[in-house]
Amino acid sequence: MHDKLNKILSRIDADYVDIRYEIKRDTIISFNGRELSQIGANTTDGYVLRVLKGGGLSTTVFTRADDIPRAVKAGVANALLIGQNLDQPTRLSPIEPIKDTIVPPLLEDPRQVTIEEKRAIVSSYIDIPMQQKNIQTISLSYEEVNREKYFASSEGSEIREDLITTRLVGEIVSKDGALVQNVRIGAGGSDGFGRIRNREDYIEDRMRMALDLLEAEPVTGGTYNCILNPNLAGVFAHEAFGHNSEADIIEKMPAFREKMKIGKKLGVENLNITDNPTPPGQLGHYTYDDEGVRVRPTQLMKGGVLTGRLHSRSTAAAMDEPISGHCIAEDYRYSPIVRMGTIYIEAGTHSFDDLLDRLGDGLYILDAKGGSAAGENFTFGAQCGYIVQHGKIAGMVRDLNISGNLYLALMNIKAIGNKVVLNERGGCGKGQVNIRSCSGGPHILINDLVVGGA
Image (cartoon, rainbow, N blue to C red; front, side):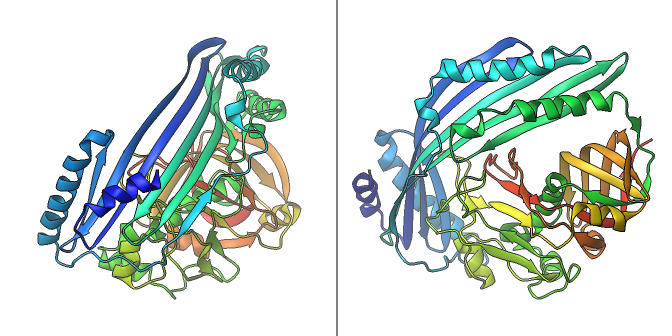
């Protein structure tokens, strides 16, 4: 395949060219209650051609080899047109050419598991909550995505990397009279089908939460000191802080760049945040981004001080900062954009019991249920919470959302737990959908969060 890609590159007169060819294989098995609503597998493929010429960087997407001449012509013409309309020409941060092949080690290759066995496993998970009186329904899907990617550039890089993702996603809905509650399901990773097997305990835990919510009281709105569990701490790191560390978001926003200036103190002294997709197996793992750059662990905050940013080759050159390997596309239909891989708050020194003692009175809030950030302000829903009195967990509360200001929240973190847990659901919808974007963290204690409720 690389010979074919290099032949295409050789036809193009430009300052720089790269091309990505990808074969994408999807499998999906979906249930609504006990009804099988979708089952099947699909294979598609396509090319993404990027041309840098005359200061402009263009992207052309095509799916047929017959379209190569048209794509080359359009790519060059569009790059020149883009360059004529830019205040500053696009430059790419230099990298060394790479030739490498990455085939991930799998605990169990999902491609060797029959679709009937996959269906039977998902069906068995459906049966667990459906036997309970107050469970109204469960929706559950098995999603398997295999991206077989080939990358070549005019600089001499030739990379193949396979990305294999398996996930269970859905929700459990409980009902008692007019009261309806729902709890999200999300489990998966990049190390094979073993992530999907033997998840009965996990499904039962989510079912119990859905049932317990029927007995919970609505939270009373107000300002609280709160402990966030690792799932919610990870979403906080992703939504409230992480997007502000993506260079393409702040590149052309001078006021925001000043707020997110490298070397600026933004958080408490014991707060460290990293984006590191390199550990294998976890959902956000990859080795090379879709510009052919090897990803590296990137320290975004150290001791409360902003120390790094996530970059593409063009944003790294424009901002004169180190390249990081964080330019990712959803698949062959898209040009890559800057985005997080695996972002998390690093572990601190406190046990969970110590966090409860330090909290005294407040809320213990679990699991994100949607979230968004606008500039420096954020809002997240939560699956549930617990009232904490005198350092002890008391009754469950429901219907929670939390909001605040990023910079105030970073300064109001009072203690950080000693164990990092990475989320298995993942996902990010910035511009494109990235199912492998992962987040996590330890439990964290934050003062003065605004909690919406009754």
